[in-house]
Image (cartoon, rainbow, N blue to C red; front, side):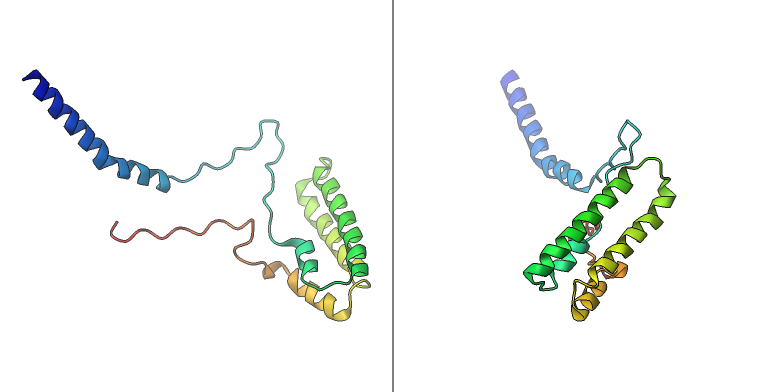
Length: 150
């Protein structure tokens, strides 16, 4: 008799696990991810990539070997200046935006004589702020549609 009770209890427990297992795993998929916490040392959190960027725009222009060499040097110089500006803690964050815009404008001015008129027009079109693709590397993930019947 005692053995029958243990068997029934084991069957009920196993049935419960089997019945609620899919519900528990489905709950994991719905739980939102926790936002990243800022570093303890007070440094700003790392920035996510914003879009294809200048190099990706240049890659779409069918540059000659000479143009590639010249643009690579200009882009490298700008990236070094941007990195120095980002790491300079003496500049207030509100003042960084205009300085970065100056660097981007200087880059555009340096690229204009390197690129043909047609390439430069296409470059400006590709690097417009509103011209970034919605699914770029820094874009938030699209919400998943709910399963039918839930």
